[in-house]
Length: 466
Figure 1 (cartoon, rainbow, N blue to C red):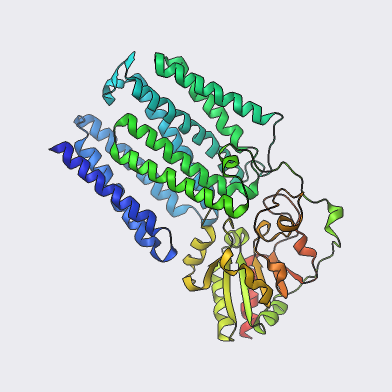
Figure 2 (cartoon, rainbow, N blue to C red; figure 1 turned 45 degrees about the vertical axis):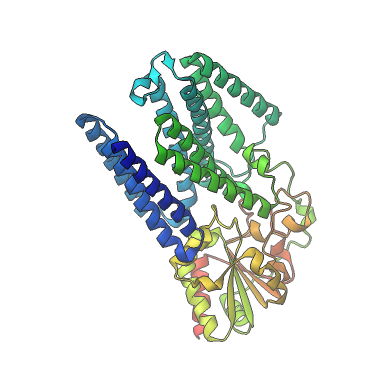
């Protein structure tokens, strides 16, 4: 009876997780989706505590661990700025991978606690599940750590390409597979830890050759890896909720990565195998044409936008760094009062993670009807008077469309250069996260607005009001 009730509770939690994913698919229902997810996770945790059958002492340790982890998570969630959210997500992915490794190690040394046998006599099925789970978990851990370091600026965002890296990765993959077979047939602790070491190394080698422009796809893919790692360990623990949750995260992350790869003209299998980013070089300085730029002021920008019929705003990571989304919303309100049509164009990889810009604009109470995906609005730039780029760089670089030698060639961009005038708000002429120069800066129709994004937009708002 107790087992049936636990299964039913886990099923309810799984349904809530599915509803959460559905809610998170659109900004207007994202709050409801988050609520479903929290309720589902609460049900799953309580069910596990109630029906785990552990002693009072063990239960106290579990609750203590939940309290410590929950307190740390709540503190981080309240203190972390939105600009650091991508690296926070990558860091949390690494913890999921590490947890999978630790659980598998616990199952190896105390199999009787998991009901999978005794030391030296573990079920073959459990050994296979443990080995696959620990391999994916270890890859997720080190891969996520590298992604965190790249996103946080602790290591270069440029690709680090090792000689014969594909052969090294293939060799490591084959070695891990052989070790999994050995572990499944012998239960050797040595082969288990060799799987862990090989997978940790493979996680590093898969991520370091990937450049910064492709990092949002990497974060999405690591999210998928963490889900599959959790699902694999769920089989070892014989926990239905963990299996379902891990499978949902793994499959949804893989689907999102596939959609993003199609949108960026990347190979999905190359993402999985770490085989893209940085093999070609960017345009040389001699290929950039005239290197002079046209610099404007806040008054110039206000005049151009006030007299425009339509303005399309393209936000990027610079807007997030400056926390300019609120004052940007004020600028849009002022333009609308002048009868100007204003739209936001969101590039699928603007910022450092999928949906980064959508979250920031929602934080500033920007109406959902004003926000458009790139595919829905990109054709309108030809009929647009002013394209206003605030803090974006690589996602507007014409090299992705015109220069086959560029490392970002094939990635769709916001065609802001097709607008009558492009106002480009940026601190300097420095390259974007991909590490290449942007020829858009030097085009005749571009006016550069140098300075802090928030301060500059505030000046534009004052000019509009004047």
